[in-house]
Length: 303
Image (cartoon, rainbow, N blue to C red; front, side, top):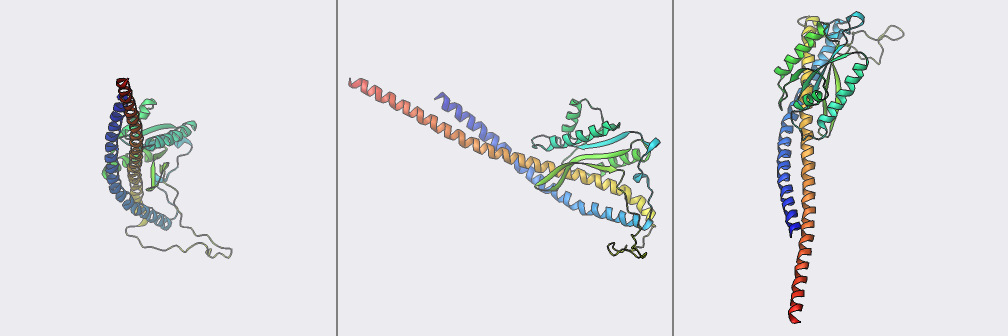
């Protein structure tokens, strides 16, 4: 009887846990749907800004801008800023572990080249991890379920200011890149310096004519002039790219938690079924023992 009672108590506890994981799964699903709309909605804007910057750069020709500089020789400070985006809460499967492993590999590679890493960490999980590793954190970032562009803009402006002043050589972002609801990959993206822009020079064929494989460059009229627009759009590209990374990371977190809680709920269902079968066997064994005792008593009374 004691064994059956223990199984009943354990089954009750598992059912209570299942209710919690099911609720957390539903909450994560609702947050994911909301975050997905934001992440997908901003990607066309971020992509279009990059295309516009490329067209402006092609109109200007050789582009020179502080955000495009590549430190060399005496300009090198051997300092690199690394923005690591994690979550505030756990129960998200391998989400935080994957991002942290990827970031640590990149940090070690950069340190092996003689660079000093300045960490900008978002999320309590990342802060706890780097504190445990005894790595100094330059700045702790406040992470919420709904990142705001104004908050990300402050961070982007700070990083751009340090980069243009020559205090750091590059800026990288370690985050979970959201590709679809079924695919999220940890990634380290270079934020600064920006990727090389086209110069607008056409490839010519043997006779000095444009190559047929290269499409004709469309000529635009800009107001104000392309260089002024580029001075405005390059910082906007950095801000929008960093904001998109925060949105992708948040959306990936909700996906990971939703999948983890669904898996926990399914495992709880299986455990309840297993415990029910064990309880039935224990109860059947108990009933059989009681019947045997009764029959033994009857036989004793007859004799």
